[in-house]
Image 1 (cartoon, rainbow, N blue to C red):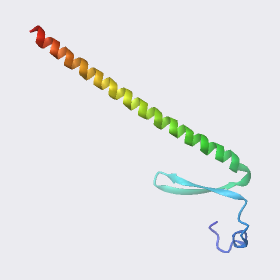
Image 2 (image 1 turned 90 degrees about the vertical axis):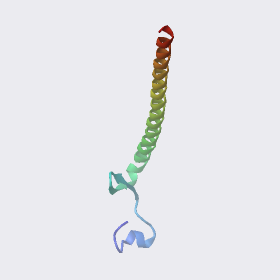
Image 3 (image 1 turned 180 degrees about the vertical axis):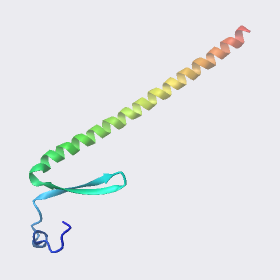
Image 4 (image 1 turned 180 degrees about the horizontal axis):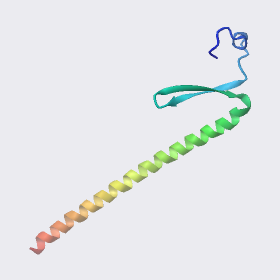
Length: 88
């Protein structure tokens, strides 16, 4: 809580809700989340994290596949050059 002299905070009871904090670009933000929305938000955050992991794994697989393609093309070009030299 950011309020000075908040009776709920001073009593130790606190607020029946949660805070969501994060960044959007360079900007920080905070959003109050009522207690009844917290379970739904927690599920959404778990799903978002799982999706982020999948996207990262896909990026790694894509990069490896593209590098393998480049290597195969390079090897084919080198083999073609060797074949041209042998025919000459």
